[in-house]
Image 1: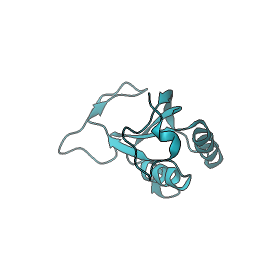
Image 2: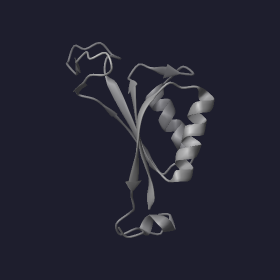
Image 3: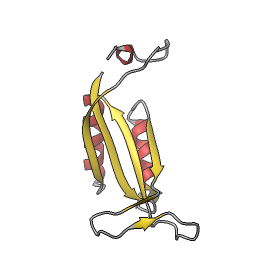
Image 4: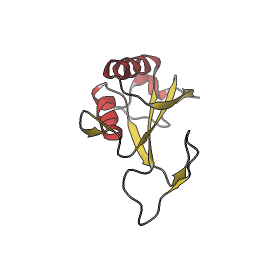
Length: 117
């Protein structure tokens, strides 16, 4: 299938409607019917302020970034973007073309997911 790869970057303590943004975004993706989503906590990195952050045992919570990823069809991408605009959530993201599918699909997979590369 042809679609898009979304990766959002948020501070782990960033909140929207009282919830952690990474958690809220996964819940919203699930409500929109996306096939799946993941959140990953970074080990180290820097952003627009060029300050290096590293995960250490004694770090204060909230200092690192969480990456939230979705691989979506064009229709799903549009629904996700519309929802985020409506919610006025400020997020940095990467949005790339993606080709995806399931190797050896089973009956529970959507028919289009069984396409061969």
